[in-house]
Length: 388
Image (cartoon, rainbow, N blue to C red; front, side):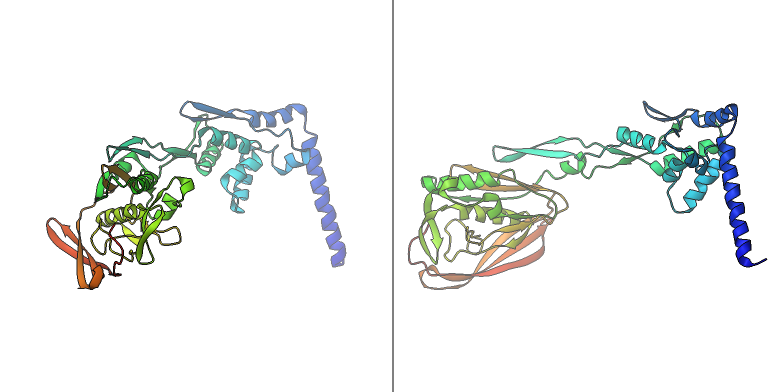
């Protein structure tokens, strides 16, 4: 017999076997058919705390051919064997169980929708109470997530053991990113700085107070940057700023927003004493009367900015206050173990108040010097006008 004839005979035999099998299962006596369905209609309970879910396999939407393919009419052992075969093909246990026991995926979705919830981090809120921070906190909440693979394994084991017991739904607790305890550790005053201004210069004082209000209550999150210009915004009359003395192009003149640089300078020095990283700072062209040489920080709408980075492992909170000519800025966050002292050294002095200075920070720990950092050198132009 030729090979081609042999192949034809084998194919005919396979087709005949498949047709006979399908015919057999579709022509079962009603009482036998009912016995197979009874196995699948048995209620299986899934429980979590006070939540109860009942599963009954539902094959009503399957054709007879699909029922045969999914071993609906075979024994439980054969069904579980098919589950294992699907699992070994690379599908997860939940997918394998849903293929053989129709409706299981819908149950999983219902269980997850009822039980799953995202964790909620604790939240810190703070107010400026007489120039200092007053903190309140909301407690964190843990989240929950159903372990669908573990649940599907338990479902498989129950059917394999043929023992009647409710399946306890395995749930993983999800931790919030931030806890109340962690936030409470961020309430230490890391550093502060105060400068003084002429309270009688009403326009300048108005601008200072307006800028302080923009900064007050600001939070620099861990690893984030803060831009003075972005937080305070443009200094324009439309935004409420008034005309006062400013330093521009090496001389004193009049412009909108005069006095705001004293706020940025106060912020700069408070940041230094709080051991924060300063990523951008600019000097004035002339010396400022409200700060030591080399510790001023000039800002402008045209580009010069003061930028800080939160280099700590927690949030940084700003409190800003104006009181009868005193401008005070405080930084709160994780405990700062250092006492930091600023030091300005005049290297050279020239006519009309021009000079070259070097600025330093001295770090003390338990009363002992642990490091001495040079910040920068600054040259200030001759002053041909008047002091602020």
